[in-house]
Image (cartoon, rainbow, N blue to C red):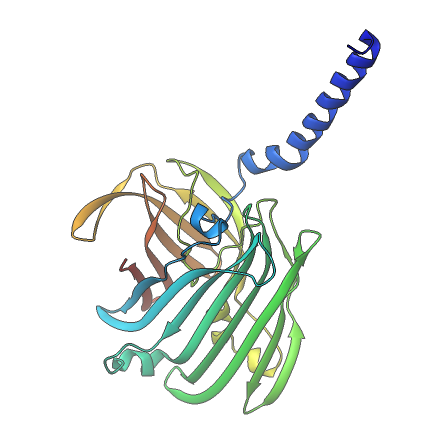
Length: 288
């Protein structure tokens, strides 16, 4: 046995180190008002089978697009993942509403995250053929990495105006690393309870496409912050042939409204409705 003084020093050092770890790493994640972190399932963390989730996007009662989401392990990194969402036209002919509002050719959104849920970066690629019933081929790519808690996305556009490249306003990323992207539905959201609320930065590449000045190197919408709140009452949603009791999250921002239905028992996101304008809503419905 070491002398009593040495034992006290060792114990004191142990307590200081663990208190410091709790204060800097754990307390910020459980503090009220912070958004839930990204959740990586154990199978994803272990690098095992990561099934693709299929969705359908319904607009005005008709299937508008197909959506696939999934989690991919980053090559050469055992603890980093990409959460991705890929949109494509449905197998049937796209309804007239796509032409009237947005002729979307393709869209892929990605979050680069650590296994503990912290966000490391993002990437989005979109191609459109028309905007609001006007032929206007436009390609846009938005990418950025998180550094010292700040994300500064770089935007590259290609259109009839030529190629443009510019940075948009930096985004402060919360300690939990979660940025809300309404068109990248996550697999699960854990830690919810009725009445929980938080403020969260959001990033919406589709709204950027609709911004009048983006093709010319400007931006009027698509970034900002939202207030999220879990409704006090749960909701029963038909899914998989049965009624599932869900917690419902409402996200409200100056140019964004979104509602997310989350399974009360397992935290699985089964539906997400995004309001793009007074007359246009995208209803993202999980199929498996």
